Length: 80
Image (cartoon, rainbow, N blue to C red; front, side, top):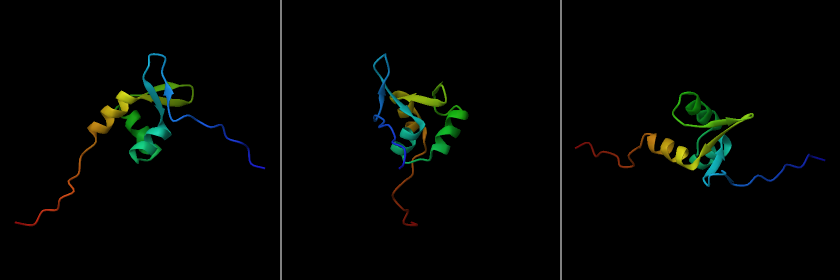
């Protein structure tokens, strides 16, 4: 019989009142790989705090990272 996994909440509320996310939650929310999120943390592009064996990010840190990502245009040029 497989071991039971604990249900994890969507986010944890920080004692100061802001929401906190794990690498896996941020990766899933932004449709990126956890590997990419770890790289962004390592390169200083995404601010995170290490607690034990995991990194945690605030909603504001994730928003800043999201805004720093390059935008792509959905419109194709007509060659004119």
